[in-house]
Image (tube, rainbow, N blue to C red):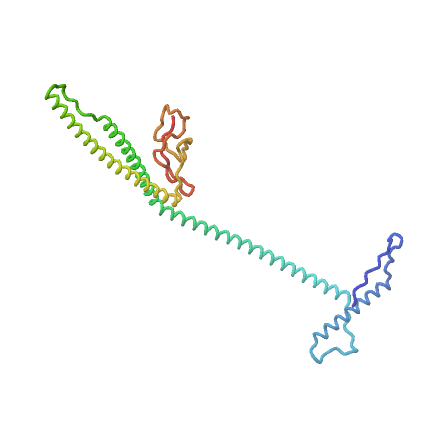
Length: 289
């Protein structure tokens, strides 16, 4: 059956109103629809019948009334509703499965993060004693280097003062032979004093060289330890000249009449460190009171 022709639309509905359907027109439409259904049923029966059992040419198909048609339409609608419900239920199940899968992936990610965090904490706990030892070694080397430098400066200053203050001993004021003997004795003492001063200067130079070599060795060792601490991500806390921070510093002495604002850090007694953004050791400082 061909498609239903679209009804002609009048140019002006108010001028040319649509004609009412008459009983003959309704009967013609039903007859045409019935003929189309008969053709459709015949084609379906021919396709479903086995070979050699085709419908006779003169046999007419069973009439399909309006009740049967409505029943088929109602059944089709019911089946479509069932399919719609099934599709909707499947979509809801898929959405729920996706939600559960997303939650499972988030849980796995949290578990992996917790495992990684625990592993990192375990590694940090294993490294902490070694880092503490390195920090103690740095403190000892720094203290020894400062003391060696102080001794070097003291030796240089002290022996320089002794060399400048050295002077031959003046004898008694005698005349004649005694005066000559005294002058000879003074020259001999002067030569001996010059020789002693030269020997003293050489000894002082050797001591100063040894002390300077010791200071250089301490300085090189400190730099090596500093590089190791930097590679271990230990960051020193800057204290001198900054306000006192109770979160990272400890006061070992409050200095009065320092001429600086109260609470300003004047000197660092022991260096403090941060490790991975967290406090590793407090800095011990002197602050202005």
